[in-house]
Length: 212
Image 1 (cartoon, one colour):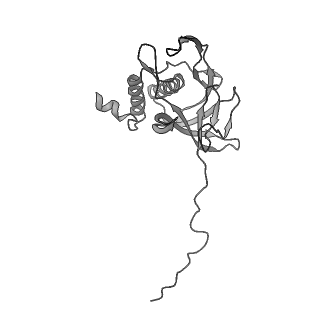
Image 2 (tube, one colour; image 1 turned 60 degrees about the horizontal axis):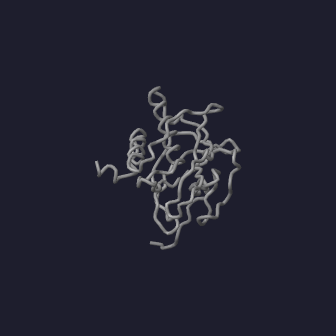
Image 3 (cartoon, one colour; image 1 turned 120 degrees about the vertical axis):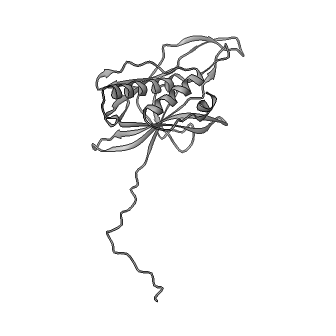
């Protein structure tokens, strides 16, 4: 029996496609950016009026990344993004959703994460109630700065104007009206799990399930 290696016929076995997954984040100036190789060094930044289009059934989850030395949850929305050559590519939006403490001790999730969850929930419910296919979901996400509110820094006693970042969803030229997800931490996590259930996907926040 020969031990020689037999070469397979050429042209039969496909080569793995080199398709990059584009990951987006949102900065404090309410501008979308492409994740770079390290935090604080974006690969690119979109103009303030540029949005991100998506088509197809949303896939959601939660990833954990280290931010300023602390492990934080990021809400993940994976989708197909139309490209200039009329094709699509797999893209992901990741938004930090660990929340921050208020003066009364409550932990409130970031506005942009609550907006994205609220928009997706509205889109999914519309499709389900209309007996349509979830693969028919589409829209465009735009970011914006809030009007601002005056808050007092508890450590210095000084007043400052805080402007949060928000996300609007458009269907063509029409803005989608939706209710922002509850920003209270546990309520937000519960609503994310409800959204996943509507999509027949696993609950991203398992601790919320175990606490009930």
